[in-house]
Image (tube, rainbow, N blue to C red; front, side):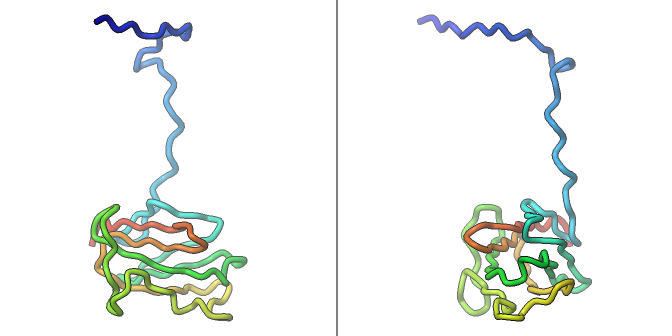
Length: 132
């Protein structure tokens, strides 16, 4: 059996002369976490305090979002259960007036290596623990 590949009219480029893909944006780090997903349409910033608590600063027009949080020890692994036995934590600030513009909110503390924040069926923040 003989396999014949398609012939392309594009010129051959060696590894040295090939066009390099655009560089990815710099990795965003927050304390011991790095962001795998960070949706700037919803988030303004993230901070982690000295105790390891994670806080969100939402965009002013997204303060009313219904946020849920899921945690796991490995990327793509089954979600861990919170202390209440549920896999999904419903943010306490999901009440009218629960968040204020320019105020850090949605504090959580977890030993999990991965934290996913969801709103409207979409993961808008995915954090990976890279340090302590």
